[in-house]
Length: 531
Image (tube, rainbow, N blue to C red; front, side, top):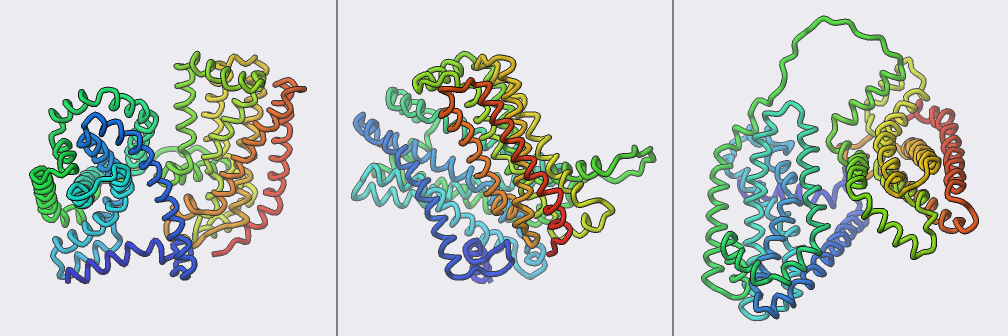
């Protein structure tokens, strides 16, 4: 029975390569190979990133006689990447699988179900851990017994990451069962993890320099508060006792975690979820026009999906955070911009470059691009309502413009103030950014109408993998780049305000052309889309 469960879980793990969730059918052999090669390419890029990081640490620490510290640090990094990369996936595999009720209804011990799924998590974590630990081994170039121990430690570290992700998944399952609004909770936790990642990413160079310059001090600290990390480092350099001690500790943690989770699995999977009891209250309902009702419907759809919020609204958070950071670091930002553009001999291009930067950031927010596809098989509801298709499309575009417009205005105004642009230049910057957002929203909607996908089995497909989103995002990058390049080329004989005015007019004309297509051809397409 356990063997059958493991075989089923491994087969499910391979469906990402062999099954097309967009079309709901198996991939062709060629498509599966291409998909696998794409993943290998991404893994290769990540591998090279950590390879270069390991190169910066290995030689300096080895010269100081601190080989164990090198492996301790790379081991800690392996654990961090493994946990961040798979904690939510682990939660989904253990507690959100679609066949949970089916398996529990069978005469299968919960411990068997848990073991099969933890094995799946372990296999996935090997990939995450190998992307960090294998470059560390390759860069250091150990031989003999230390190399054997380092290879064994890949599996021990993976087991530790599995313990941590399973424990955190258990905590998430406990908390999720008591939350009414899981969307914002998921978004909040995801933003914390992403924020931690970016903080570490921007600080990594400084951290490496500090470790190299203060190796003995860092080593002394780890021996004090980081005893397990110290033992990991010693085991990596060939210490038999450290390898045995570290491995036994991890195995003991795994057994304890497995025992706890197996006892609580049924309770968590069958727990009655939190929710407010519906209470009828009589009240007057305000009359609202069709446009307001459609816009409200689009907004509710947007905020009710953590996938939609995170993937199509991350740029809004970046703009708000950037506006605050700019005002705090105003002098530093101006000095950097003056240095870069002054070296290029185009100091007057600052307002145009600032507007192009805001346009580039807003390109990440593709709210309108998947909006038609997200209607899915229920698109007939909008098609049969007594509302013009043009008004439905207008609501989808308005949501994109409104949600991006507010933070973009704040960021543009902050940039103008920090970069000491003139008042009329700031106003023209706002015109350029506003016209770009209008064009971007309309263009994304046009792409979705030309290439709709209403047969998805997961909303992540149109939001993260859809061709309209890709064209909308890359199209935005191209336009933002064109604003900067043309500004640089024409800045020698045109004032910044003239460049901004020309770009605002061109973007507005393009937006009007796309708008005209949406109101006629686009409305006709929407009215006749079928599943």
